Image (tube, rainbow, N blue to C red):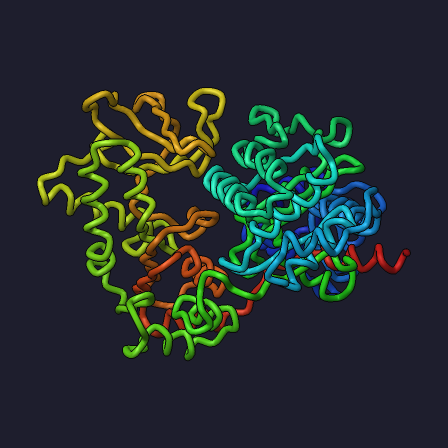
Length: 542
């Protein structure tokens, strides 16, 4: 991409040949998820005289602010996100003051951090709630919704997430969070359960039009909701944040849930992480609340300890947790990078899926265990491991192929118009038997039921015995087999390792070498961005 773009800049904009390496470096960084790069003073001087470069006062392909180089498109998107967030966190919404009795009814355990979330949600129009798995992000969001709904009889609520699977999980979690509320919130809980059943992808919420790349909802046609809750906010790239904030009506409250320690978005930007940094610097008031108490894992739980070690870049501690023979149970296991071990670990569950006689049983068996990989290609990648599993099935006498019974698939593209499927949907191919027709079966979001798509009507898809960690983000499994390449790899970062480990609810097997674990934990590279800088500038102006 960089060669084609720089050639265009040279031909149409007079970019000097000596500046091409600098621009190529930015374009490579852009492709890797960065929104800007830092350049030297001599490079600044080299580029500032070129018509292709602006200081932000006029439109041009590239922008230099100080020592930061980025594209006009990314620069303007960051500026819009910064302005809109500052507005949301500084404008006070209308409404009555919270009462202690209400707070006690919603948070009887007295959790101070969760109470802070509720207070922030009433005092301002935007709140960022972060925390690891099991810290109660969706629980507190559900109770905040109950508080708001108890004050507004016809409160319009939207629940959304970047992927269909994450949207389903959000709806289920919100429904569970409000089902056990105090009796005074019974009527409110029933209304929220209806909203939970309508949780959808963020693209669907915004009315994204694949043919034009535009959204139905925008500044001129804002989203018709009083409060919007978005889960898995770390997966949102810069442009999606831009479109979401553009579509927020003036009186709408926005609650963003996520774990900034997880992998950032596939596309450029690390917005949630940048906002956490900005909040720590006091740039967002009290809009950010980080939930630290874990309700899923005990303080001594191996998965929690392993996640903490990775998060703090302590490779030695991570290996100590992985190799602790005296640890209770088998929540965490570790073996050298042996691919047969990875396949052996999920083989009983593969057979459970193959032997399932109903769509519900097949999907339930598939959801229990999954191989997660750092890479997509190669023997240690998802493609290689899927092929290895299918080869073993063939050797075991199970017919394989695109229409083989029990084959799990993951959709690669959005195809809502024809099949109703979106990128990331996971289904299982089943042969006809009993009352079930042959086809690919998917879980219907929010209903617990399944739907069938004919094999010939399926959009582009891949086998899904093994997934990349990126593709599994937003999902959880009872057990995870995490496979890393045997040597240090630039894609194996603390964020990837942390995200992979925390997809497991109960057990995780890490298939890797000691050196790969240490190298992953020691990496401290982060995506470069100008968002925090733009937020600081807005604060200085005020």
